[in-house]
Length: 199
Image (tube, rainbow, N blue to C red; front, side):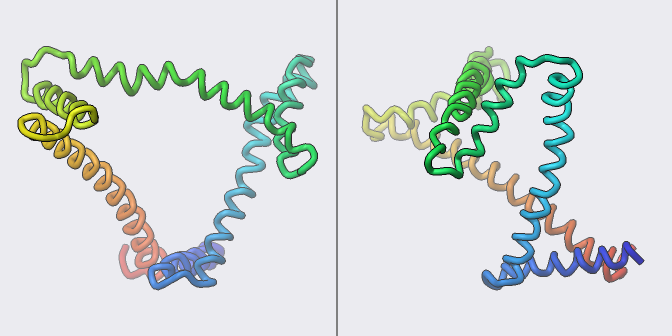
């Protein structure tokens, strides 16, 4: 009985979301706000159990590591973001957050730049490495704006444009496939679990 009721509620909310295909309407906004509210309601106890208890309550109150009180106080400064007079206090944890992001720059350089450079410097022994080398060189030539894209140089930059279009198309196709997979899952739910038309 509970499963039947929950399935019909889920089906109703799914139809509310699908109603956006017609136009923005109160049913879609209700489902959207309900999803955000439930997500936040789920997120708060999740943070409490997975972050507050193991990283603050247990070390400070049970293991007496009082040094952790200072970062905890610093983190609470985020709350003052909503107070006009004390909002400047929220800048301190933001600064630390930006510093942590800055610490990730060397790793990003290694993952995004150095690995790509290493892939482009392999011996040209097969078709894949040749294509990667041509794509890397022609794309870099396209973004060299100190020379006009004319003549032989322009033909090389056109090859770089084709490489980029193929890359963008593959990314877009992957995104479309992910969305279609979600759509197929919801349609299977409506036809199979709710209407029982397929087993």
